[in-house]
Image (cartoon, rainbow, N blue to C red; front, side, top):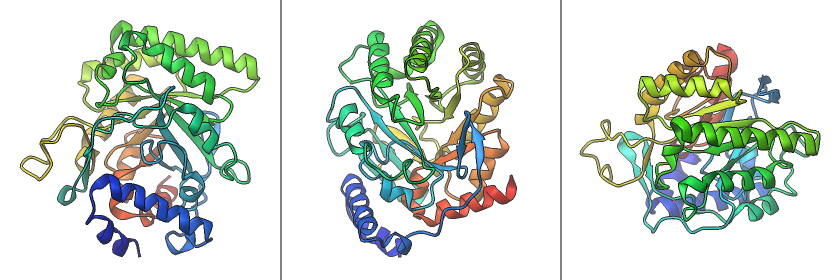
Length: 343
């Protein structure tokens, strides 16, 4: 069924088909017809960040930016769902077109630019969902800075985001690695990173004391890092005792899609061509952190082997996005089942 649906959706531009597919999924959910699209959730409980996840396969941030489709998506077998990236204030993002499929490479280029309805709207959307209330669904919320907030003041936006989402998120993710917000990736390095993490950890501790419940904090990093960068990141992440690292975001690298249609579009590349680069970063980062901090592996998971590669590299959990677009709900079941058997 998904193959037929995809053939229709792929006749449209990327962003139009994205919204249509999510709205269609929502309709099927409301009609209690989700079983037409997916198999039952694989039960493979695993504890990461002090949280018990139903299985190791999650949805990466970016697909459901505003938390509008969580209940519908939860019926497809995900062990956890990450929404966002959301910013303190609503923003339109970059001009359209800004989402491009490179079909022959099972890849996507996007330059969305953190388009979202703002953190308050996201919280309104997820306030009454069944996911996490009537079942054991794990909800991550990914936060970013507004485009017009100077990078040197980005910490203020992240602190606002943490304050707002703390009661609703099962875990929090700080996105400092999107390639589509100018200057954002500078926060991954040197003193910029240390100052940011110092503020974030203090805020986490303050919120822990205020609400008497501890919510894990993860950082999402880029794949475009050399060995020295990764070594430095590992030391810094250990120093600040982060709860998890999500590796990786999209890449600027076009080496595996050269001469293909849309390959010269600006933005971050995701999907199959990212798989090896992402896995290599995971392996190096796990070693740099002496396996002391769990890693959530994301980037180029399009089949069971690419998911196993992430786990073999040291990831505790995996997330999918582009692979889900190309292969549909069956990929969730196949990967979750394969990881259960392998682990």
